[in-house]
Image (cartoon, rainbow, N blue to C red):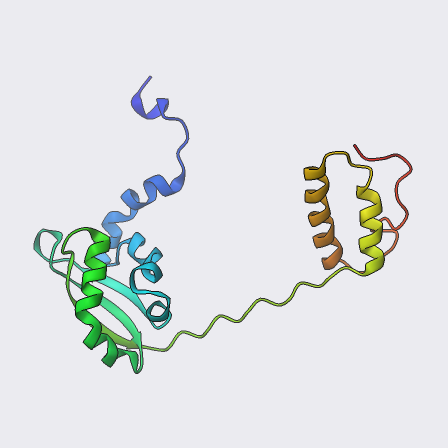
Length: 173
């Protein structure tokens, strides 16, 4: 049996970086881990207003230039913060991968809107659900089914027959 066959199935994330490396290098795209961990590297405040666009590596993969998309007034501040940012970025890589930043003005990111509050089931629906779940002996299963039931009830129209306002004759086990 060959080495490849003996490993079994692999998650796509384990091979994706190796497979996409040549395309990323041709287009100068930054390391996926850099983009993914950008907020942890520069902090959430800066990460909300700037993002890596591409990384042009220097000879030997060191002393490259990181192109950042920056929203408006932050560009001037980032020029002053460049030494600290370079230290954080190179600390992430573990070597001097980036020697300078190139700032490019882009449209500011819109703040994420908070999610809509989930609709709540009516008290009548919640009572009917609790009645149906009372017959389940396992407390963990009862709690999980309770959360699922509340979620389903909150998303569907109020229909007493559909949601079991009348509990079943036999207990669910």
